[in-house]
Length: 473
Image 1 (cartoon, rainbow, N blue to C red):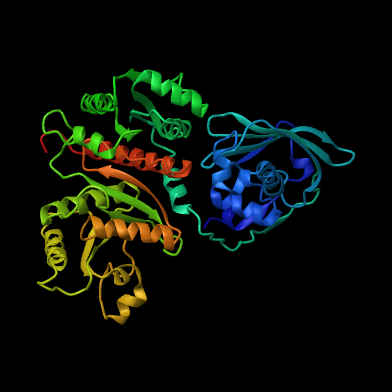
Image 2: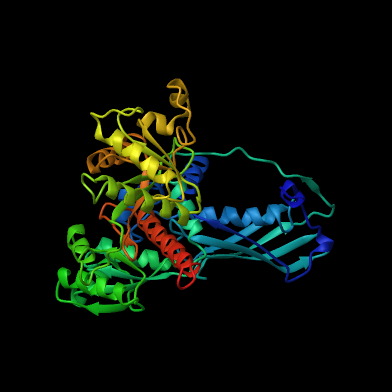
């Protein structure tokens, strides 16, 4: 930690000049909203009740207006002028809502100095990641006249059972340019809103593929603007899936997003041997989970595509998940191959597959991660459980990826975590030429955006990996 991180220092009245500015940036999370509600007692359902918020004019949960006002106070009290500042007055004009995932840039600028009373008037502005003003106003403070330099107080970390890991995924996706994404058959409110919200976060550039009249009707009903998006008219959902896959093959889009059609209908076109998006690997589904009681992101695979995968398919499923972990910045993910027991039992085929997969990793048939298995679920995620069983392993107790024996086990595991452990997750189909975003009507705005962020990070990683391989290698 640098010296600047360890101390907090003010600027005195005499040191400050008219026109001087200071700012901070903060992404709005559900944890922010709930902590503000707990502190203030403001439990207006527009802020804390997702079901109610969906029926409001904004269609989703929004921040308390004074949350942005509190951030203005943070800049004044910690940066300019900093410690010793006394608030005298504040005006605020709320110009637009702050939505989950929005990144606020909070700025203060010196307008006027009153030398006789050591007072300073600041122009205050909060704008979102698109540069739109959400709060404007003026603050008047009594500026400090003596220099103050103190150790920065380290506040305790507060962890609510919320979706911090999904926000980390969104934050990680702040830097790559948005990807052109074919949104397939978005003819209901949920599908079209998911595309627009991801576009507003600069995660995707939507190419809307489907019946034009139905897409426009859905946009009107959802009260979203799609005028800036390319729209490719098709007769029905099957034609939309076929066209979207063709766009990906031609390199005109970098990802696919499922709209208002069945997953099987979209994947049927993806999986075609002629004209599809197949690669040498099988397709698989990976869910990036935020489990409040687990200290790291948890990838679970495969709960959506491969029902009873054979050994060679499991090899592909593991490699697909490892590559996604790399895209998320984990360059040596720990892969736990799950079974009912942690010893080899010829009567339990998943233990034999686990042993074979580990040997495949030893021989370079699976790369980029550390594998161990078979491991029972408790030994994969609990260090104490692994120690009790006497398991010596680099993976046991700290797995980053869980490979389930089959689709049934993976699906039950995911749903148990969701309903009993308050876990939330964003999913992606990997192993095709481009990432495929599977959204659900039940997904909230944050989950849809996190799924888009996963696809963006994976597409960016794949492009960088391809560029690092010279022609002929």
